[in-house]
Length: 142
Image 1 (cartoon, one colour):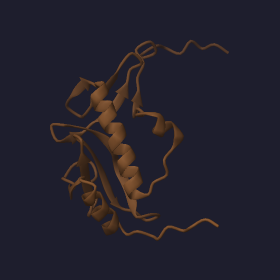
Image 2: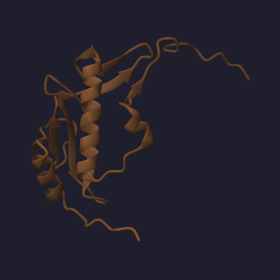
Image 3: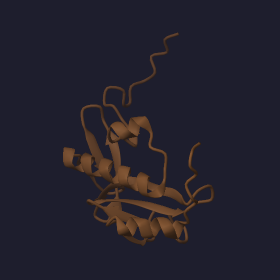
């Protein structure tokens, strides 16, 4: 018979993240604009979370490398991945991607999220923009 895990509150999750050496602070005036939103960070990577309706935690902004205080998104251009913010875009290194992947796994375990197979294999991109098809008109083949 399967054991049921006890329900954890948002404050319990925040305490557990603090115990696992995550930096936990109120989210700024940035993207989330949700009361009670918290920014958690570790390894130079951050995400924004809030108290969830269906579970203890709602992910407001996916984990990304911090660039000038802003959480970046991973942009895949086919030949290379980039870290992109509203003002900056830099090539992603293996160390960046490794840190984002490790942070994501630790955050999922601490919050009790389901670990998906494709995400467990490595870092997934937020955006895909291949130069071979960028701006190419539809060929209209049937």
